Length: 149
Image 1 (cartoon, rainbow, N blue to C red):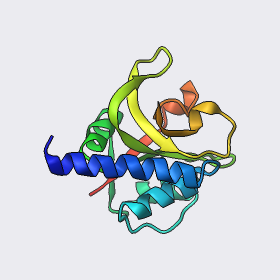
Image 2: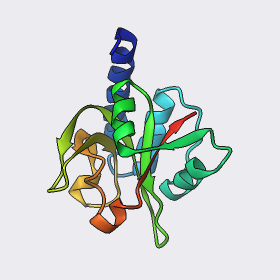
Image 3: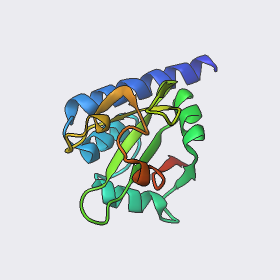
Image 4: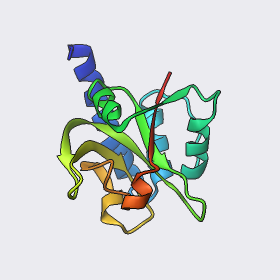
């Protein structure tokens, strides 16, 4: 990893921590704050609306695997993950740089940052939890990750 990637990864980690501090009880606002601080020109969207937007053909975002998401974040590339909910509010996270962390009995996963309205402890993170922690096993199977083209 070159010095430029290291600097981008530091900025990504700082944006994740700052976004969580600013909006610890709101994933949509915390991710929006992170995106803005990283120079991403995205309007505010709720978690459900953001996930729908990321998946749209003309969004400028493309899907990556969870493994790719971690590798990209380690190079300072912005990756958003999440899941829209059909019966309420969804949840979104920003993938953070750093070594993967263990999560339950399912292995290790990339780190994440996000606020959350939920009291579920795994949904609140400024980089010390993983992208796996916010979701139940059935929901995890439907979580997707996105980066800009």
